[in-house]
Image (tube, rainbow, N blue to C red):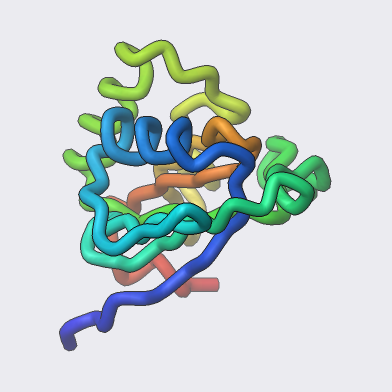
Length: 139
């Protein structure tokens, strides 16, 4: 089954800083834009940064497998090798992780690689991977 692209809109405090981060650090291409928003192609999905500084960022967390996971976050589930490559790229770029790249639920149903970091506006991003994609929705 082909997975249709999703659309996500999120607030940011500075459009140019956001453009630089999402294109230069995450490798997203851009689509349409205005003085108030930018469309990004994130692994085939449309994510849109809207200039709304008073709404940017998140501070609330929940405990998940020993980590304080930001409640508000988004990202992509990548193939394992792509996840490892992205983790290496982010480390080389000096990105500060809020949750370092590691394996969560090790040896359990749903075992996954995960990492969390913030964009320049304080929006939390999680990129994860499953060696066995059938485990994505397993319980």
